[in-house]
Length: 230
Image (cartoon, rainbow, N blue to C red):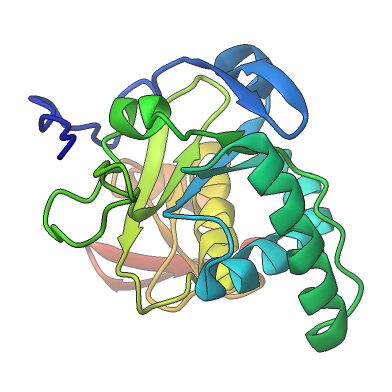
């Protein structure tokens, strides 16, 4: 049975997202070039025509305006060839249209039948020996990477096969990271757009009075403030 060795390194937050060239449903891309100055979400799937992933790709397709207004490009990956992807997209759009509203998959999906990109991003299932294709190659686990315009990995999440991804949460984290980069803040538990945020620890008390005149000091280490953003 074919096998793939475990990687001797792990991509961490702060790592540069590896560049690659791959065939996708939108043609051949060079990943860093394709991202350009945008943020990116790379999310993987073990196989085409799988039920949970069918619902996920439909949701991402319908959330295209939410990603676009945040300057985020989305790209999927599945361990199949382009013909399989294109046939699967028809099911994704049909099912989404019947259950959630108009669904049009406009983002590219990487054809990774040889697992080259999955191996590069350490997205292969090394634990479940049954999670393999008919050639014995391990399937990809369902992973999400958020990548910033400098090609730095800002978030990774890996999901078990039984749990569909929550794209409300992924968009919420994108908002948190982008606001934190711009305004020297952090976001508290269960934060949503429009709610108070936390002033970053690097902001000195006198500086906080200028930057955040309406802030509250709960403890020396915990200061909250409204944040108005356009």
